[in-house]
Image 1: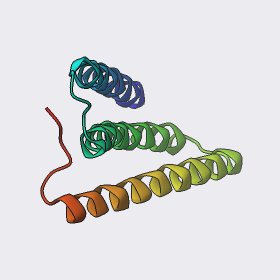
Image 2: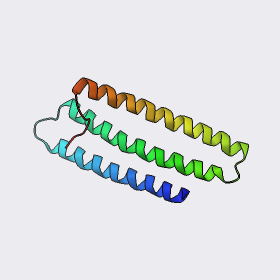
Image 3: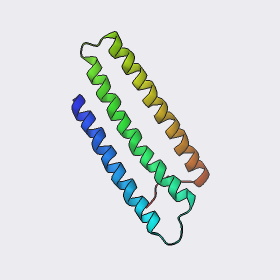
Amino acid sequence: MARLAELSAVLIIAAAVLEGLWRSVRIFARRDHAPDEVKESLRLQLGRWLAISLEFLLAADILLTAIAPTWDDIGKLGAIAFIRTALNYFLQKEIEAYERHHGGSARTD
């Protein structure tokens, strides 16, 4: 199960990168320069996918640590969980601030 969660995270990241790259190319291809809010929206959309992948990776770490953990394993899991939770927290705050300021979803097409 842990390996499946890790593979899921890799697939999500790969899809997010491809989507972000495609949208970036479309933005650069426009003759009129895209406003900063379009670029920011793209960045936040990529960040959302990365946050989801972090959740899968955390699940994998929990599963791996659940099998006969040592104190060292528990400490590493705690550090990883803290870092990933902090990243998700601050990303979510950024998304909420963007949506409050611009109204609606932080999605670009």
